[in-house]
Image (cartoon, rainbow, N blue to C red; front, top):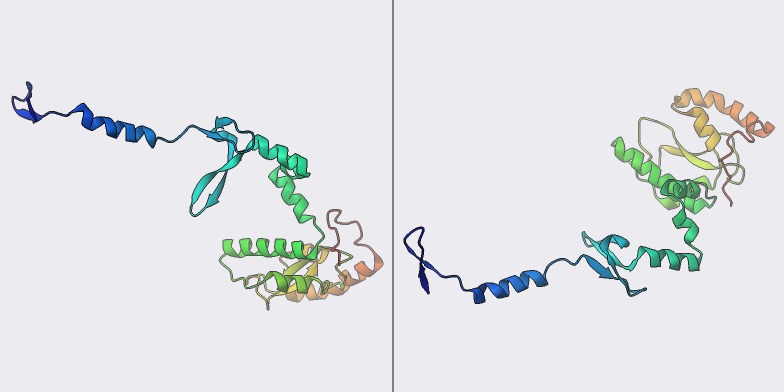
Amino acid sequence: MLSYNEDTGRKAPRVLWKVQKPIMEYSKMHRKPKTKRCSQCKEEKPLNFFGRYYARGKYFLKSWCKRCKRRINRERGWDHWYILRESEYRKRRRRQTSPRIRAHIILMDSRQSDRRHKRKNDMTCDFITSLIMKGCLYCECSPSESKMTLDRIDNTKGHCVKNVVSACLECNLTRGSMPYSAWKVIVPAMKRARNLGLLRGWLKHSKPNIV
């Protein structure tokens, strides 16, 4: 159906309201909601009251609100982990004495360092666990006496299976970036200091690995 346009002097098709109405209703139906219903307290709350999780390349809102999540964690006895800050939680995890947790922390730290410096890393969690259970290669202390770490023989290379040895935290910090040939000269002195008990209480946060 055509109608006359006074501005252009030409006939233009008339836009009927009946044609536009379904389009407007469709846009209203697919408009993003500003609130969400919690599956626990059954209350309508704003979207920022819900946590998010990542799956299949997208972010989705959780079905529980943050208040209900804290209440359930408090009832289950998990509230102390959520009260702590993330940095404090990481510090507590690093102080864990389980060899398996210690091996996982060493593996994640070594991969992050090698990725940053573009070095090779072919270690596994089982390899690190079996290596730190043998004790320190330098001062010959057991995992029950000090916290175990991994020391690279050649500091210019990454954390490879053939380039790492087990070392206690005291020996690893003492060596630092020292050349391996110079460090081998100091190793007998470190072993003697360990046997005399002179390293005891040096690192207060260095808890031994429980075997």
